[in-house]
Image (cartoon, rainbow, N blue to C red; front, side, top):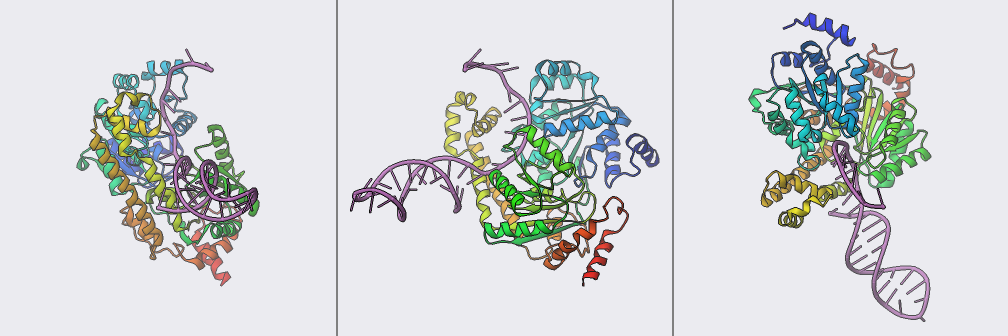
Length: 483
DNA sequence: CGAGAGTACTATAAAGTACTCTCGGTGCATTATT
C-alpha cells in the first residue's frame, strides 16, 4: 500500500496533476483495499483518472463498460495520447476482420472498452473469461437504472456478466444517482448493499445560478428566450424535448438574436453531429439547440449557460444537463422556461415507450414472429421473453415502470413550482447534506437581471488570467457599482 | 395527453366542420439478395 505522498508523486509524474480532485483519493484507496465501490462524483470530477491511475499502479486487466461508442473511442484516444497504448474498444465500428484480430489477441490489451450489447455476445464474453478481468468498471452506471428496463435492456445483463467474469473487483461511476438509482445499480449487478463502499461527493455547483421562469405560451417563450440570449455572454446549450422544435428554434435564434446557433439531435447523421460538436468546443458557434442526445462526454469547460426550452422528463436528467455549465468554476446560469402544457410531450413519450398488453399477448402467443419484427417494442418484448418473463410479469413490469416515470415527471413539476430555494431542493433530492449560504443562488429575478447586466464585465478580461480571483467578490463589487 | 396534419363530408360551390391518425428522447448492434 502506497502513501498519499507517493500517490501524489505518481499523479504528478504520470498525469501532470498537482492535486487529486475531491473524492479521487478516497475512491482509489477503496480500490487498493479490493473494495467494490460505487462512486458519485460531479461532472468533470475526473472519473476516468481513477481507473487509469489504478491501472498504472496495479497493472490489472480492466474492462470498462461504457454506454456510447464515442465515449469509448475518446477514452482510447486520450490514453494513447498519454502514452498508454494497451487500450482498445470492441464495438460495431470495427470491421469484421479487425474485430476478430482484436478478440483473438485480447490478452495483449490492458484496458478494454465495451458496450453492454457487446458483452451480450458469446464470443466476446467467452474470450474475456479466458483472458481474465481484474477490475470491472461501469461508467455512467446510472444507465443501468435509467436505460435498462425499457431502452437498452442489455444493461440488465451486466449482473450475469459480472458473475461470468468471476465477480472481479468492481467500480461503479456516475455523476447523478439518488437513493433509488443507487439501489437499481447495486441490485442490477447483484450486490449486497452492505458490502459495497459507497462514496458520495457533494454534487453542488456553487458557481451555478438556478432560475425557473414561467411563460404562458410559445410566443412568450420565444421572446423571453431571445431577450435573454441577447444579453448573455459566452456559449450555451438550449435543451428541447423535440427534434423538430430544436431545429426550428435554432433557426429563429440565428434570425432574431446576435448569436450563432446550430441544432443537434439523434436524427442527424453521426458525421454532422461530430462536426457540430467540434465547432461548439472550439467556440466557433455559441449556441447548441439540442435534445438529450447532446450530453454525455461533452467536456467543454466554459459553457456559460444552459437553458431548458422544454423541461426535462426527470430531475436526474435536469441536474445532469444544468451541470454542463461552468465546469471552469466561473459564474454561470441555468434557466428553465416553464410552460405547463409542455407536459403533453412527456406524457406522450411515456405512453409511447411501452408495448400495450394486446401486443404483448400477441407476441407471447406467436413467439416465432418475434424474430422477424424488428421494431423497438417487439425487440423489447423479445428480450424479456428470452429472459423467461411470463406475459403477466411483463405487463406488470411495464405498468410499474410507466407509473415510476409518471412519478418522476411529477417530481419535476413539484421542483419547478417550488417557491423556496431550488438549490436546497435539488441537494435534498440527491441526499446531499451540504449546507450553503450563497447569495448568487437561485430564482431571484433582480440578481439574475444584474448578472445579465454585468456578465460582459465579469468575463471581459478573459477568464484564464483571472482564475485565482474570487468571482463572488468580483460579482459583489460590480453589483455595488451598479447600485 | 393534445397539437397539428390529413381526410371526408357538406352540396349550385367554397370553405367550414367533424372526425381520425400520427407524433413526441435517449443508441447499442445489425451481415446479406438490392
